[in-house]
Amino acid sequence: MKSVTALRSPAGGATTAARQSEPSGIFRGWFVLAGIFTVMTVGSGFAFYAQGVFLDALVLEQGFSVSISGAGTGVFFAVSGISGYFTGGLISRFDVRKVITVGATISAFGIYLLGEVRTEWQMFGVFVIFGGGYALAGLVPTTSIVTRWFSRRRSVALAIASTGLSLGGIVITPTIGRLIDDRSLVELAPQLAVIYFLCIVPVTWLLIRPSPEALGLRPDGDPPEAGSDGPTELLGATFEEAVGSAYFKFLSAAFVLIMAAQVGALQHLFKYTKDSIDIDAAAVALMVVTATSVTARMVGGLAAMRFRLISLASVLVVVQTIGLVIIATAGGSLAIILVGCVVLGAAMGNLLMLHPLLLAEAFGVKAYSRIYGLGSLLMVIGVGLGPFIVGVLRDLLDYRQAFLVMAVVGLSGLGVLRLAATKPRLTF
Image (cartoon, rainbow, N blue to C red; front, side, top):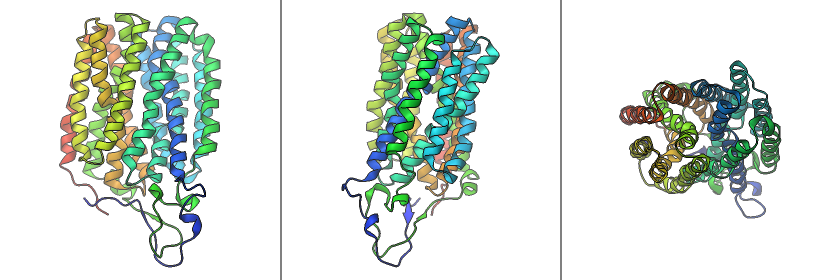
């Protein structure tokens, strides 16, 4: 496949000064990336990683079973996936900052309502609201913006931005977990909602811009092509071409299985460690897995510029499987759990980052937001089912068996991923 160039500029005319550089001489994309990093950090800390903390709080404070609370977490991810699909279309039509602001508002309301949950059906309704809002301010809009602003350095830019996902798990989620353990979700929910909103919306409007073209710039800060002027044309496959390809179908199926294993284990890691040892150990385990993810993702971003992406993803699935097996067989030993967290963390963030990279590599940026929106919707089948399956297996058997089953599920995704590797991608 030919390498994908993000933009093509029609020939003719003189180049305007506005398209050459920012007045400061610093590529505006780095400021946008800082804004995306912040949004990802706050979103993951209060929503993605915090689902395990909320699950534990609902079990303790409201007396829900682990399987029912895990189903609530599954609903959150399922709704976020469905909403993410529609988010792809919204950010193609509206200013992405408005979409993120609406999402942050809805998410904040969802966090507030978590403190009002008293019945299982109320919990499911709240997770519908929370998940829908999270999607509007989550991975689809943020990765789409990064994809627009960066082409040659896309893997590094996505690695930096998505490091915010891990930082949220390192700094924010354990803090929320300790505060809820000391007080209660009922008491803290209104304060968490306000903090979440104030940490996302102002940053969004201060730093983020929809695309470089809107400012007369080009991805990566590249100078305009000689003799080019006027609007640029985004290159890539159409939405219909992409989703109709065998590559997209196999890749999507593979990530359903891979993310079911990863997120299923991750969302129960806090409770598993807390039940096996104590809450301090649970906080350490969560910080270790996310801290490792930060370091590994930066290495992975550089590796993605040198190695075939689908081969890199295949290796990481094996690493993820090993990590899950180590955690499952830890037997209450914090040292062994932490070793497993390091191994799992090495694969975790990189696999999440590689999904949008694989799609952008194969199909370009022309319809990327819609393609990634659908890819995320399909992937969320696994993301939503994973926590529920682990919860059911834990109630029926124990966490050890549940984590081993997730290891097998994730490894089966490797076989499907290798099938995707045999299918042709589009060339344009």
